[in-house]
Length: 118
Image 1: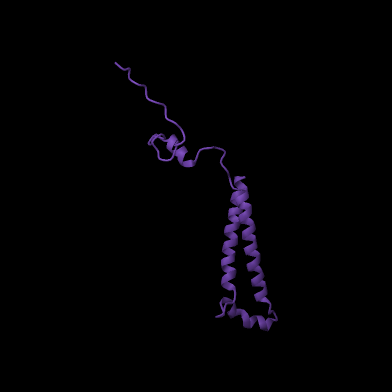
Image 2: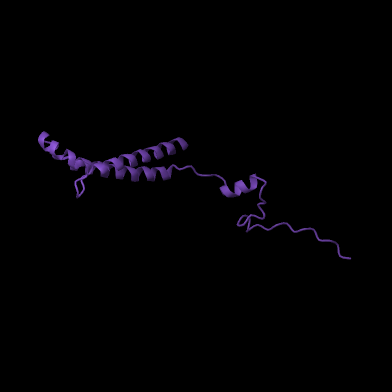
């Protein structure tokens, strides 16, 4: 599952980069980068470039949504009941897990032996 997750993340990044370029090419109210090519498009007979760019934007947006949902589905999951912070606190001896705030609050600590009464 880890390889598929990495593949989906890479595809999402690629789609995002392509989306940036496609949005920059789109014609805005001021003309955008596509305005430089509009005169050559009318000379060559191609006048539907805005439809192609708009369809590419929608296709990339839909692809990003689908890939994000698929990525969330195949994301690696832990099989342990303990959190990552709790594992780090108990594996390294720099902290005492019994004194670490929030860990083991539902557990009762063993009572210290009582001194005999005299």
